[in-house]
Image (cartoon, rainbow, N blue to C red; front, side, top):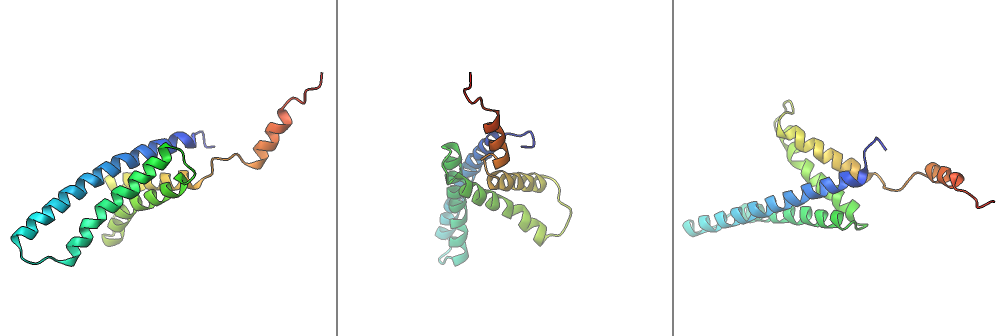
Length: 144
């Protein structure tokens, strides 16, 4: 369909999720270590800091599971791919909502990759019934 193999697109998006998982895991470690350094200097902690410390590990987990499910071609890859694509679209959409302006630069690229992921994982890999019927009609019936 559309001259593009959905399996290849899903695998490419899966490896994108793997990269994002590693990136989020690295940022999570850096943010948590930074929070501990600040906690040593200040006597009290703010509850928002704990919430922010949980965001990047959660994102790393979602992207990591999505990558694993897509790579292993599990049936639940569709759900995890949609979840990872929605999570990927949240950042540029938050920029667009908070700062109404023209979309440009990396916001446009990230949003387009997220939309491509939503479309790719939403579409079914199965052939439409018309195509299956046409294939069955073209098969030889074994008559001599």
